[in-house]
Length: 171
Image 1 (tube, rainbow, N blue to C red):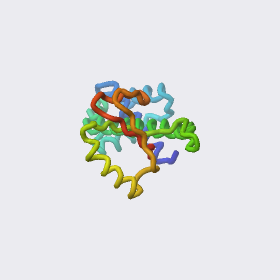
Image 2 (spheres, rainbow, N blue to C red):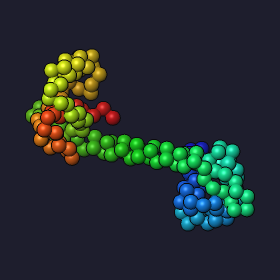
Image 3 (tube, rainbow, N blue to C red):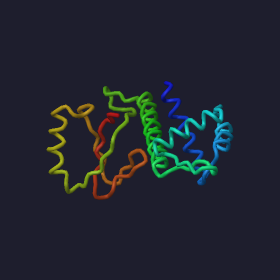
């Protein structure tokens, strides 16, 4: 982890402490809470981080009452949470990819797919478009799976008026 990533992680931790408190906190209280979370930062270091967070508009100095988180600070935490979720999902997909067992010779095994639910009534207009996409080479392979209405695919069920189209996952 680079130095700038470590600094950002500490700033995020400060914002989280302020958000969880839902009130203004002094740097001494923030320092104590961060120490309980495993961060070893001095009060002076916390104050420097808080000054930077104030400059960025993520915290607000409330004088003797300490600092509070701003709406921008809450937005920053929400964005960070989204990035973490994407990272977790990417790691899960990597794990599934390593465990694939698909064997083309005797079409069997597992493979990661994206599933699209397509209304049966639209098949005649969509199939020619899909053929163009496959022919242009914009897919991860040249195969797809078609699942009938009510079929169970992974944790999903194909609706009664649809077919499920499975294509190899490209993530």
